[in-house]
Length: 369
Ligand code: AGP
Image (cartoon, rainbow, N blue to C red):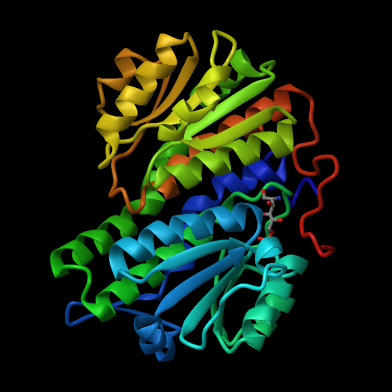
Protein backbone atom coordinates (compact mmCIF):
# COMPACT_ATOMS: atom_id res chain seq x y z
CA UNK A 1 0.00 0.00 0.00
CA UNK A 2 2.83 2.43 0.77
CA UNK A 3 4.09 1.92 -2.80
CA UNK A 4 0.62 2.72 -4.15
CA UNK A 5 0.62 5.93 -2.11
CA UNK A 6 3.70 7.01 -4.02
CA UNK A 7 5.46 8.45 -0.98
CA UNK A 8 2.43 10.38 0.27
CA UNK A 9 1.03 9.75 3.71
CA UNK A 10 -2.51 9.28 2.40
CA UNK A 11 -4.22 8.51 -0.90
CA UNK A 12 -6.19 11.73 -0.57
CA UNK A 13 -3.03 13.85 -0.51
CA UNK A 14 -1.56 11.92 -3.44
CA UNK A 15 -4.78 12.46 -5.38
CA UNK A 16 -4.85 16.18 -4.61
CA UNK A 17 -1.29 16.45 -5.92
CA UNK A 18 -2.12 14.43 -9.03
CA UNK A 19 -4.54 17.09 -10.27
CA UNK A 20 -2.27 18.91 -12.73
CA UNK A 21 -1.89 15.57 -14.49
CA UNK A 22 -5.49 14.34 -14.18
CA UNK A 23 -6.88 17.64 -15.49
CA UNK A 24 -4.49 17.48 -18.42
CA UNK A 25 -5.43 13.86 -19.11
CA UNK A 26 -9.12 14.77 -19.03
CA UNK A 27 -8.72 17.47 -21.68
CA UNK A 28 -5.94 15.93 -23.79
CA UNK A 29 -6.98 15.22 -27.38
CA UNK A 30 -10.46 16.55 -26.78
CA UNK A 31 -10.11 20.21 -27.73
CA UNK A 32 -10.20 20.29 -31.49
CA UNK A 33 -10.24 23.88 -32.68
CA UNK A 34 -11.09 24.19 -36.39
CA UNK A 35 -12.24 27.28 -38.27
CA UNK A 36 -12.90 29.14 -35.05
CA UNK A 37 -15.04 26.32 -33.71
CA UNK A 38 -14.33 23.96 -30.87
CA UNK A 39 -15.11 20.34 -31.45
CA UNK A 40 -14.90 17.80 -28.70
CA UNK A 41 -12.99 14.69 -29.69
CA UNK A 42 -14.79 11.44 -28.85
CA UNK A 43 -18.32 12.81 -28.91
CA UNK A 44 -18.51 14.59 -32.26
CA UNK A 45 -21.64 12.73 -33.31
CA UNK A 46 -23.39 14.23 -30.25
CA UNK A 47 -22.55 17.85 -31.05
CA UNK A 48 -25.82 18.51 -32.90
CA UNK A 49 -27.86 16.76 -30.27
CA UNK A 50 -26.39 18.94 -27.54
CA UNK A 51 -26.68 22.10 -29.62
CA UNK A 52 -30.36 21.42 -30.33
CA UNK A 53 -31.33 20.36 -26.82
CA UNK A 54 -34.19 22.39 -25.37
CA UNK A 55 -32.98 21.75 -21.87
CA UNK A 56 -30.17 19.95 -20.11
CA UNK A 57 -30.85 18.10 -16.89
CA UNK A 58 -27.94 17.07 -14.72
CA UNK A 59 -28.32 14.24 -12.20
CA UNK A 60 -25.66 13.32 -9.65
CA UNK A 61 -24.92 13.00 -5.91
CA UNK A 62 -22.42 14.59 -3.54
CA UNK A 63 -19.27 16.01 -5.06
CA UNK A 64 -20.41 15.01 -8.54
CA UNK A 65 -23.54 17.10 -7.95
CA UNK A 66 -21.28 20.06 -7.11
CA UNK A 67 -19.49 19.57 -10.44
CA UNK A 68 -22.95 19.60 -12.03
CA UNK A 69 -23.70 22.93 -10.39
CA UNK A 70 -20.52 24.42 -11.90
CA UNK A 71 -21.74 23.08 -15.26
CA UNK A 72 -25.06 24.88 -14.85
CA UNK A 73 -23.23 28.21 -14.66
CA UNK A 74 -20.96 27.26 -17.57
CA UNK A 75 -23.60 25.92 -19.94
CA UNK A 76 -26.14 28.66 -19.29
CA UNK A 77 -23.52 31.37 -19.69
CA UNK A 78 -21.58 29.98 -22.66
CA UNK A 79 -24.22 27.95 -24.51
CA UNK A 80 -27.48 29.66 -23.45
CA UNK A 81 -29.39 26.40 -22.87
CA UNK A 82 -31.45 26.13 -19.67
CA UNK A 83 -29.92 23.71 -17.20
CA UNK A 84 -31.41 22.07 -14.12
CA UNK A 85 -29.19 20.30 -11.62
CA UNK A 86 -30.92 17.58 -9.67
CA UNK A 87 -30.01 15.42 -6.73
CA UNK A 88 -30.49 11.97 -8.26
CA UNK A 89 -32.21 10.77 -5.08
CA UNK A 90 -34.88 13.50 -5.32
CA UNK A 91 -35.29 13.35 -9.07
CA UNK A 92 -36.04 9.64 -9.11
CA UNK A 93 -38.91 9.90 -6.65
CA UNK A 94 -40.69 13.08 -7.67
CA UNK A 95 -42.36 12.37 -11.00
CA UNK A 96 -40.13 14.86 -12.87
CA UNK A 97 -41.02 16.37 -16.22
CA UNK A 98 -38.61 14.99 -18.80
CA UNK A 99 -39.03 15.39 -22.55
CA UNK A 100 -37.59 13.67 -25.59
CA UNK A 101 -35.69 16.84 -26.50
CA UNK A 102 -33.96 16.95 -23.14
CA UNK A 103 -30.43 15.73 -22.63
CA UNK A 104 -29.72 14.27 -19.24
CA UNK A 105 -26.09 14.39 -18.11
CA UNK A 106 -25.35 11.87 -15.36
CA UNK A 107 -22.13 12.54 -13.45
CA UNK A 108 -20.49 9.88 -11.30
CA UNK A 109 -16.92 9.10 -10.33
CA UNK A 110 -17.58 5.46 -9.49
CA UNK A 111 -20.33 4.89 -12.03
CA UNK A 112 -22.03 2.73 -9.40
CA UNK A 113 -24.11 5.18 -7.34
CA UNK A 114 -27.54 3.58 -6.95
CA UNK A 115 -29.60 6.78 -6.96
CA UNK A 116 -27.85 8.14 -10.06
CA UNK A 117 -28.37 4.85 -11.86
CA UNK A 118 -32.08 4.85 -10.96
CA UNK A 119 -32.41 8.48 -12.13
CA UNK A 120 -30.91 7.46 -15.48
CA UNK A 121 -33.38 4.60 -15.90
CA UNK A 122 -36.28 6.93 -15.13
CA UNK A 123 -35.12 9.60 -17.62
CA UNK A 124 -34.54 6.91 -20.22
CA UNK A 125 -38.07 5.59 -19.81
CA UNK A 126 -39.33 9.10 -20.61
CA UNK A 127 -37.36 9.22 -23.86
CA UNK A 128 -34.49 11.58 -22.97
CA UNK A 129 -30.97 11.09 -24.30
CA UNK A 130 -28.58 10.17 -21.50
CA UNK A 131 -24.98 11.30 -21.53
CA UNK A 132 -22.64 9.95 -18.86
CA UNK A 133 -19.54 11.45 -17.30
CA UNK A 134 -17.85 8.68 -15.34
CA UNK A 135 -14.37 7.96 -14.13
CA UNK A 136 -14.55 4.19 -13.85
CA UNK A 137 -14.43 2.56 -17.26
CA UNK A 138 -17.12 -0.04 -17.90
CA UNK A 139 -19.03 0.87 -14.72
CA UNK A 140 -22.81 0.36 -14.47
CA UNK A 141 -23.60 4.02 -15.21
CA UNK A 142 -21.18 4.12 -18.16
CA UNK A 143 -23.00 1.09 -19.57
CA UNK A 144 -26.49 2.46 -18.92
CA UNK A 145 -25.98 5.72 -20.84
CA UNK A 146 -26.46 6.37 -24.58
CA UNK A 147 -23.10 8.08 -24.89
CA UNK A 148 -20.55 9.73 -22.68
CA UNK A 149 -17.10 11.05 -21.98
CA UNK A 150 -14.86 9.45 -19.41
CA UNK A 151 -12.91 11.59 -17.01
CA UNK A 152 -9.31 10.41 -17.08
CA UNK A 153 -8.53 11.04 -13.43
CA UNK A 154 -7.14 7.55 -12.83
CA UNK A 155 -8.23 5.45 -9.83
CA UNK A 156 -9.48 7.52 -6.89
CA UNK A 157 -9.02 5.61 -3.65
CA UNK A 158 -9.62 8.26 -0.97
CA UNK A 159 -13.29 8.34 -0.04
CA UNK A 160 -13.24 12.13 -0.26
CA UNK A 161 -13.37 12.94 -3.94
CA UNK A 162 -10.73 15.41 -5.14
CA UNK A 163 -9.16 14.76 -8.53
CA UNK A 164 -12.42 13.27 -9.84
CA UNK A 165 -14.15 16.62 -9.16
CA UNK A 166 -11.64 18.70 -11.11
CA UNK A 167 -11.65 16.12 -13.94
CA UNK A 168 -15.46 16.30 -14.09
CA UNK A 169 -15.37 20.10 -14.17
CA UNK A 170 -12.75 19.97 -16.96
CA UNK A 171 -14.91 17.71 -19.14
CA UNK A 172 -18.03 19.76 -18.42
CA UNK A 173 -16.17 22.95 -19.34
CA UNK A 174 -15.22 21.43 -22.69
CA UNK A 175 -18.84 20.40 -23.26
CA UNK A 176 -20.10 23.92 -22.46
CA UNK A 177 -17.50 25.45 -24.81
CA UNK A 178 -18.30 22.94 -27.54
CA UNK A 179 -22.06 23.61 -27.36
CA UNK A 180 -21.51 27.38 -27.19
CA UNK A 181 -19.22 27.22 -30.20
CA UNK A 182 -21.72 25.15 -32.18
CA UNK A 183 -24.62 27.45 -31.29
CA UNK A 184 -22.61 30.61 -31.90
CA UNK A 185 -23.26 31.86 -28.38
CA UNK A 186 -19.57 32.40 -27.56
CA UNK A 187 -17.68 35.11 -29.40
CA UNK A 188 -14.64 33.82 -31.27
CA UNK A 189 -12.19 35.91 -29.26
CA UNK A 190 -13.75 34.68 -26.02
CA UNK A 191 -13.53 31.08 -27.21
CA UNK A 192 -9.84 31.47 -28.06
CA UNK A 193 -9.18 33.11 -24.71
CA UNK A 194 -10.88 30.24 -22.88
CA UNK A 195 -8.99 27.59 -24.84
CA UNK A 196 -5.67 29.32 -24.06
CA UNK A 197 -6.61 29.69 -20.38
CA UNK A 198 -7.73 26.09 -20.07
CA UNK A 199 -4.40 24.94 -21.47
CA UNK A 200 -2.67 26.82 -18.67
CA UNK A 201 -4.79 25.36 -15.88
CA UNK A 202 -2.56 22.33 -15.11
CA UNK A 203 0.43 24.65 -14.55
CA UNK A 204 -1.69 26.97 -12.41
CA UNK A 205 -2.92 24.06 -10.29
CA UNK A 206 0.73 23.09 -9.85
CA UNK A 207 1.43 26.62 -8.63
CA UNK A 208 -1.56 26.48 -6.26
CA UNK A 209 -0.28 23.23 -4.75
CA UNK A 210 2.84 25.09 -3.63
CA UNK A 211 0.62 26.76 -1.01
CA UNK A 212 0.40 23.48 0.88
CA UNK A 213 2.70 24.52 3.76
CA UNK A 214 0.93 27.83 4.24
CA UNK A 215 -2.44 26.07 4.29
CA UNK A 216 -1.13 23.55 6.83
CA UNK A 217 -0.25 26.47 9.14
CA UNK A 218 -3.78 27.87 8.83
CA UNK A 219 -5.17 24.38 9.50
CA UNK A 220 -3.21 24.24 12.77
CA UNK A 221 -4.94 27.42 13.97
CA UNK A 222 -8.47 26.19 13.24
CA UNK A 223 -8.24 22.44 13.79
CA UNK A 224 -10.31 22.61 17.00
CA UNK A 225 -13.13 24.71 15.60
CA UNK A 226 -16.57 23.14 15.93
CA UNK A 227 -18.16 24.91 12.97
CA UNK A 228 -17.05 26.41 9.66
CA UNK A 229 -18.86 28.53 7.13
CA UNK A 230 -17.85 28.56 3.45
CA UNK A 231 -19.02 31.42 1.24
CA UNK A 232 -18.73 32.02 -2.49
CA UNK A 233 -20.66 33.67 -5.30
CA UNK A 234 -21.14 32.75 -8.95
CA UNK A 235 -18.72 30.07 -10.10
CA UNK A 236 -17.29 29.91 -6.60
CA UNK A 237 -20.61 29.10 -4.94
CA UNK A 238 -20.45 25.37 -5.85
CA UNK A 239 -16.83 25.47 -4.65
CA UNK A 240 -18.03 26.72 -1.25
CA UNK A 241 -20.40 23.74 -1.07
CA UNK A 242 -17.61 21.38 -2.05
CA UNK A 243 -15.17 22.86 0.50
CA UNK A 244 -17.73 22.40 3.27
CA UNK A 245 -18.47 18.82 2.22
CA UNK A 246 -14.76 17.94 2.20
CA UNK A 247 -14.31 19.29 5.72
CA UNK A 248 -17.42 17.53 7.09
CA UNK A 249 -16.67 14.14 5.67
CA UNK A 250 -13.06 13.78 6.71
CA UNK A 251 -12.65 15.96 9.82
CA UNK A 252 -16.19 15.59 11.29
CA UNK A 253 -16.39 19.35 11.81
CA UNK A 254 -19.81 20.77 11.04
CA UNK A 255 -19.50 22.99 7.98
CA UNK A 256 -21.97 24.75 5.72
CA UNK A 257 -21.49 26.18 2.27
CA UNK A 258 -23.61 29.14 1.24
CA UNK A 259 -23.95 31.62 -1.59
CA UNK A 260 -22.35 34.63 0.12
CA UNK A 261 -25.36 36.88 -0.36
CA UNK A 262 -27.64 34.39 1.38
CA UNK A 263 -25.65 34.83 4.57
CA UNK A 264 -27.81 37.75 5.63
CA UNK A 265 -30.91 35.58 5.39
CA UNK A 266 -29.92 33.41 8.32
CA UNK A 267 -26.35 32.14 8.74
CA UNK A 268 -25.08 35.58 9.72
CA UNK A 269 -26.63 34.90 13.14
CA UNK A 270 -23.98 32.22 13.67
CA UNK A 271 -21.04 34.56 13.24
CA UNK A 272 -18.98 35.48 16.28
CA UNK A 273 -15.28 35.50 17.14
CA UNK A 274 -15.28 31.68 17.25
CA UNK A 275 -16.50 31.19 13.69
CA UNK A 276 -14.01 30.59 10.88
CA UNK A 277 -15.47 31.74 7.58
CA UNK A 278 -13.76 30.62 4.40
CA UNK A 279 -14.56 33.16 1.69
CA UNK A 280 -13.71 32.38 -1.91
CA UNK A 281 -13.22 35.92 -3.13
CA UNK A 282 -11.30 35.77 -6.39
CA UNK A 283 -11.38 38.65 -8.90
CA UNK A 284 -14.48 38.10 -11.00
CA UNK A 285 -17.74 39.77 -11.90
CA UNK A 286 -19.04 39.53 -8.32
CA UNK A 287 -15.83 40.68 -6.64
CA UNK A 288 -17.21 44.02 -5.36
CA UNK A 289 -20.17 42.20 -3.84
CA UNK A 290 -18.03 39.71 -2.04
CA UNK A 291 -15.90 42.53 -0.60
CA UNK A 292 -19.04 43.72 1.19
CA UNK A 293 -19.75 40.18 2.40
CA UNK A 294 -16.27 40.02 3.95
CA UNK A 295 -16.94 43.37 5.66
CA UNK A 296 -20.19 41.96 7.06
CA UNK A 297 -18.34 38.96 8.52
CA UNK A 298 -15.56 41.12 9.98
CA UNK A 299 -18.11 43.53 11.52
CA UNK A 300 -19.32 40.52 13.55
CA UNK A 301 -15.78 39.47 14.46
CA UNK A 302 -15.79 36.28 12.39
CA UNK A 303 -12.39 34.92 11.38
CA UNK A 304 -11.96 35.26 7.64
CA UNK A 305 -9.82 32.86 5.64
CA UNK A 306 -9.91 34.36 2.16
CA UNK A 307 -9.00 32.72 -1.11
CA UNK A 308 -8.04 35.64 -3.37
CA UNK A 309 -6.49 36.30 -6.75
CA UNK A 310 -2.76 37.01 -6.69
CA UNK A 311 -2.04 40.69 -6.31
CA UNK A 312 -5.37 41.58 -4.67
CA UNK A 313 -4.94 44.16 -1.92
CA UNK A 314 -8.52 45.01 -0.88
CA UNK A 315 -9.58 41.69 0.67
CA UNK A 316 -6.14 41.04 2.24
CA UNK A 317 -6.51 44.32 4.13
CA UNK A 318 -9.61 42.91 5.87
CA UNK A 319 -9.08 39.15 6.12
CA UNK A 320 -7.34 37.26 8.96
CA UNK A 321 -5.64 34.84 6.55
CA UNK A 322 -5.09 35.15 2.83
CA UNK A 323 -4.44 32.38 0.34
CA UNK A 324 -3.41 33.79 -3.03
CA UNK A 325 -4.13 31.72 -6.11
CA UNK A 326 -3.27 32.47 -9.76
CA UNK A 327 -5.52 34.56 -11.94
CA UNK A 328 -7.72 32.88 -14.53
CA UNK A 329 -11.05 33.35 -16.29
CA UNK A 330 -13.97 33.15 -13.85
CA UNK A 331 -15.34 30.26 -15.92
CA UNK A 332 -12.32 28.17 -14.97
CA UNK A 333 -11.79 29.41 -11.43
CA UNK A 334 -13.38 26.38 -9.67
CA UNK A 335 -10.49 24.28 -11.01
CA UNK A 336 -8.10 26.41 -8.98
CA UNK A 337 -10.14 27.67 -6.05
CA UNK A 338 -11.17 24.18 -4.89
CA UNK A 339 -7.55 23.10 -4.42
CA UNK A 340 -6.75 25.12 -1.25
CA UNK A 341 -10.04 23.91 0.25
CA UNK A 342 -9.10 20.29 -0.39
CA UNK A 343 -5.75 20.88 1.32
CA UNK A 344 -7.32 22.73 4.25
CA UNK A 345 -9.73 19.90 5.01
CA UNK A 346 -6.96 17.32 4.55
CA UNK A 347 -4.61 18.98 7.04
CA UNK A 348 -7.33 19.66 9.59
CA UNK A 349 -8.43 16.00 9.44
CA UNK A 350 -4.86 14.73 9.84
CA UNK A 351 -4.29 17.04 12.84
CA UNK A 352 -7.50 15.78 14.44
CA UNK A 353 -6.29 12.20 14.05
CA UNK A 354 -9.08 11.22 11.66
CA UNK A 355 -8.94 8.36 9.20
CA UNK A 356 -8.60 10.57 6.15
CA UNK A 357 -8.87 7.95 3.43
CA UNK A 358 -11.68 5.98 5.04
CA UNK A 359 -13.82 8.28 7.14
CA UNK A 360 -16.36 6.72 9.48
CA UNK A 361 -19.79 5.81 8.11
CA UNK A 362 -18.79 6.46 4.48
CA UNK A 363 -18.12 4.23 1.49
CA UNK A 364 -16.37 5.15 -1.74
CA UNK A 365 -19.45 4.38 -3.77
CA UNK A 366 -22.97 4.34 -2.42
CA UNK A 367 -24.57 1.36 -4.08
CA UNK A 368 -27.63 1.32 -1.84
CA UNK A 369 -30.36 3.94 -1.88
C1 AGP B 1 -17.34 12.96 -2.13
O1 AGP B 1 -16.24 13.38 -1.42
C2 AGP B 1 -18.19 11.97 -1.47
N1 AGP B 1 -17.51 10.91 -0.89
C3 AGP B 1 -19.52 11.65 -2.14
O2 AGP B 1 -20.30 12.78 -1.95
C4 AGP B 1 -19.54 11.25 -3.64
O3 AGP B 1 -19.17 12.33 -4.43
C5 AGP B 1 -20.96 10.75 -3.98
O4 AGP B 1 -21.27 9.62 -3.23
C6 AGP B 1 -21.13 10.47 -5.46
O5 AGP B 1 -20.30 9.44 -5.89
P1 AGP B 1 -20.09 9.14 -7.41
O6 AGP B 1 -19.45 10.33 -8.04
O7 AGP B 1 -19.20 7.93 -7.44
O8 AGP B 1 -21.45 8.88 -8.02
